[in-house]
Length: 301
Figure: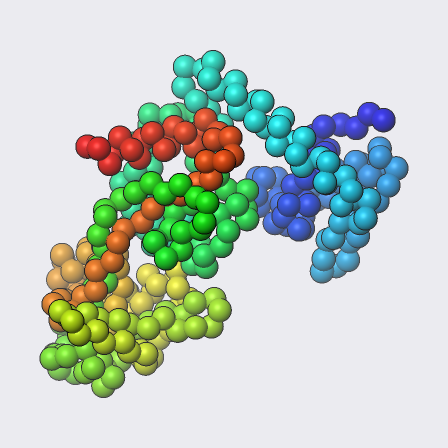
């Protein structure tokens, strides 16, 4: 039975993504093209591989049987093609990284441009999200996480500054109107601009000075989804709407310009920086190996 290999790649993409729209996003294709490829694969195979409704796309029993044998074979094909990189002057291919929005915002900008300049044949795709997910969920090769989000059986490589801090700040006009703070508990009388995780949990504000730690549930006029939307809290703070507590490096431009004024810096909490982690039990693709080597070089500088 002859089946076009390109059609099988489409089937695998849809099976991994659980739908045509998500598969199109992951592969850079479009849903209608993938749907047509799956239909033609089913015609060539003579069996239905997916049950489709207006809301869901799920593998049939035949589809699950095919995937159980096809996925390992496709992975071997990808590994064989990637091995050709060793014969190239510079590695090529795609590298997918799963990172927190904060990493994309304040750490990767100091790394990515130089990496892309050194390896022009590598296409880097960064999946930035506020929710910590399995790094391999979107077929990513590696992930960037903080200590408490490192997964088991992973190799961790330091990436970016080894210490970060949260910074509390407000606009000078806000502080002139509502007064300065003498202690973090004073925040309960102030207008806080804060974030909420996709789970619905509101992120606590935690402060530390010496042996004393204070944890607060912020209240105020603006709540944003934790991630890129936190830029809105920064702009609202600059406009005088309230107090913001966010990564110091995220607020640094506004602090340096005076648009925001630091509050209680002796209470700002420090924490360990980010880690690049990957599974060394898998064959390391050449683009990932190049990125690992580049980060190690920066760490040694």
